[in-house]
Amino acid sequence: MQNKKTTNRRDFIKSGAVAASGFFIVPRHVLGKGFLAPSDKLNIAAIGAGGKGSSDIANAYNNGVNNVVALCDVDMARCKGSLDKFPNAKRYKDFRVMLDEMKGDIDAVTISTPDHQHAVAAMDAMSRGKHVYVQKPLTHDIYEARKLTEAARKYKVVSQMGNQGASNPTQKVMMEWLDKGTIGTVSDVHIWTNRPVWPQGSPAPTDKPALIESMTPQDWDLWVGTASWVDYHPLYHPFKWRGWWNFGTGALGDMGCHLIDPAFRVLGLGYPTEVECSVGQVFLKDWQPEYNPEGCPPSSSVQIKFPATKRNNSPVTMYWTDGGIRPFHPEWIPANEPLAEADSSNGVLMIGTKGVMTCGTYGNTPKIYLKNGEKIDIMPKADPNAKPLPEHGHQASWAEACKAGFNSKEHKGLSSSFDYSGPLTETVLMGNLAIRSYNLRKSNGKNGFNYDGRKKLIWDGTNMKITNFDEANQFVSRQYREGWKLV
Image (cartoon, rainbow, N blue to C red; front, side):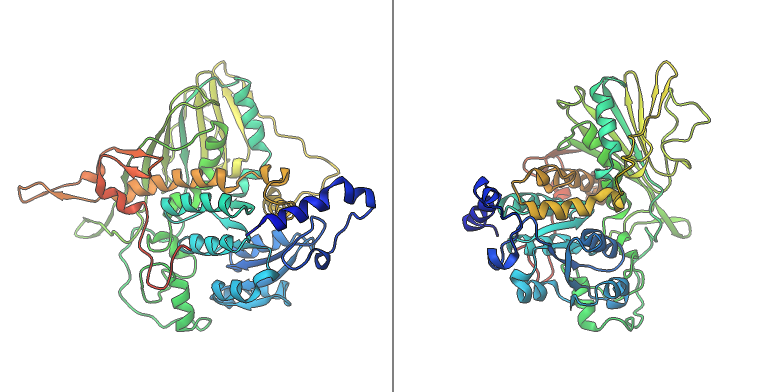
């Protein structure tokens, strides 16, 4: 955690007195252990170094601009690429042990674990004064997102969520379009994805296959982490964990932070006020629908409402669909035009009084279709002298902000610090709260049940509470398995 001593030293380094003396580069050893000069290299550790974690740590490393000092993963076979790329990095299975042992030798961490471990890893790191980059969605639960947002301010650490499209310059173009009044005032937003592309909606496995060779029983225990205990199964690890509420957040959690982000940013949205949904069913035996409370549904349709904002003077209704279900063509988009992306598989439509603004995943290919039939497709011009950074420099800009410090213009300029990505994640997880509440039922006293969770749910964002169906509030947070806590 930064203290007055840290701040004073950094301020002194950047002061005119130091500049006048001609000392522009201050080595780490001069500042003392735990103090980082902006000119120094950042010491970064990865919690989750395989899959998306491999590109997160590599992009933060930025071709040697920074140091990678430690790699933590419970399945070393999954992160072989990172191990080969950073052979001198210390290796760990348990991030808690890594943070204990390396203490002042780590400045920042990337966290790219399954969703259920994001919050505990990030909070542990932040409480020790480490800057954090956390993959999307920021957390598994709404409560966790709120606590991480507050903790980043409390511990004065630089934060960024891994929704790399937030750093796409096209998002600024879309904001300018709205500010100029090009599409008028927006009232409806349609967002959709072709996910899931993993098994979702099937019953929980009952067989117990042997644990994979690259993991020990102790490794599996660490992988399960905060979640309720289950035996190893390939339907959980690797990758397919996304379809199980115990570990993942489904199609909405996977793609919502990418696809909802442009509308959330352009329209300046905040906490929603209400949510309603319907979900697809799986038919297993005798064509009877099967409800599996442990698994995410194969498809869902969610409606979320927001109040008017300073950026867009109108209430907004957001419609989310997944499982390959997309919206129909709005009136002003020609019949033969694809929606948002070339194959219409994922996208965003912001429908205004004068036209429709569209974009694809990560804010790519923004376009406007005006009421008068005109089409606008203006992409920002790239600097011919600039060498483009991977993923729009999303990780690299975070690393530079870490070196500059919490109060720096670099940190304030980040596109997805927790001040922004925390509320965005809460909105995404609000949809999941409705999905998980959908099949909650009460006895109606007549030998039957009412599915009360299928009604519209009213949300008090400030207090993180559904006000008209208390049973739904069980999904705002969860009970961690013994031995784990949100520090």
